[in-house]
Length: 238
Figure 1 (cartoon, rainbow, N blue to C red):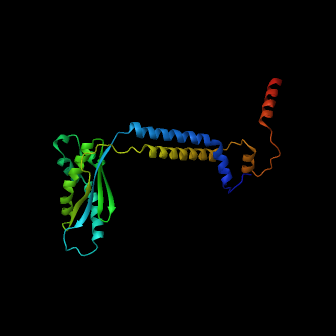
Figure 2: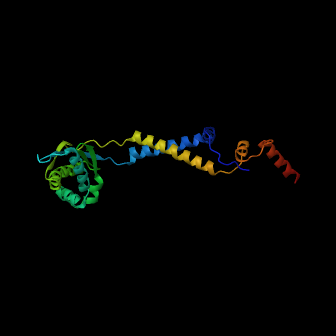
Figure 3: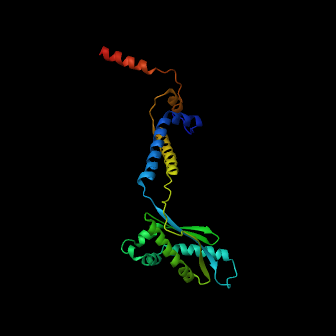
């Protein structure tokens, strides 16, 4: 009879993974190499221009929790930034050289918004063209203050920090970090695959599997070489 309610012990897990460590190692190294090479050689260079903005009170009439109001307005502006109307304004404000080449989808994918808390937020623009990144950032800086005032006339936006010129150096491709991520992912996936295969493998190939699977005593084990010898002898007799 097969044993029921049996839980895998740490020793059982070790016995599953130790013989297959070479597989885990090979898959991990391959994933690490692939992701690292992709990051370093295939992935295009990108350039980022950013602007740190701060919500300030433009009217003395606000006399309750200003920080809470600022946080609320930052969240509202984040949604407003990605609206079709706002994206259209940004595209239309770009220099004439980009006409017909930059659309709303391009702008939306290039912009990232980060809430820095306490009424501060950073808008970053990342593209493969350093000048486009800078020009998009400039357009957002020009459009942001009047847009913010339109949402709430008692608040305004001040630009605290901004990329001053067209970025010269590309962003880091994070090759070492991506290689480590690939290694860890490869180890996890291969270990999971080995565990799943072991869980569904019903082949009886050892004395331990018999003892673990059935409540019957094992009286003896015939070595594999003896089985092979008997097969050969039986074939010769035939």
